[in-house]
Amino acid sequence: MKCLIIGPSGSGKTTLCNALVGYWGVTRPTQMFKTVGNLIDTPGVYMEYPTLYQALIVSSQQADCVLLMIGSDQKGKPLPSGFAQSFPRPVIGIISKTDLGEAKLEHAKAVLADAGVKEPYFYISSRTLEGLDKLNQWIIRNHQERREHNGTGCIGND
Image (tube, rainbow, N blue to C red; front, side, top):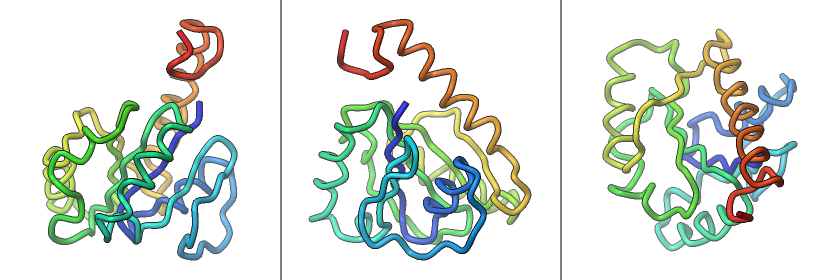
C-alpha cells in the first residue's frame, strides 16, 4: 500500500519514512517529493503555504492513503481546519515525538481533530521506537485487505 506522508516542517515525516524502511542514518529537510519504498515523503514547507496545498491533494491520487503527521512539540495550529476532507483518500492521523509528554499529546490530538482527522491516531517516537510496529502492521494489514477486496492493493480499481 502506497502512503503519502504530509505534515508541517519538523513533524518527523522523513524520520518516519526512514524508520519504516529500516534506515537510521542522518535525516535532512526534504526539499522535494521523494519516494522511499511505498512511502511518499513530502516537504513540510507545503503545509506553510496554502497555495501549495493543491500539490499535496493532487499527489494523494498516487497513494492509497494519506498519513497526516504532527509532532507533539508543534506549537499553535499548523494544520488548517477541515484539511483532511480535501483528500480523496483515507487520512490517518499520526502524532510523533510522543516521548515529550502527555500534555503535548493533547494539543496534537486537538490539532488533528480540528483538521478533520478521525481517531484512532497512531502515536510514535523515533527515539524509543514506540508505535512504529503498530503503524507498520496497520499498513501491511490494510494493503492485504485492499488486495483481497479488489485484486490490486489499490483504492479505486473496484
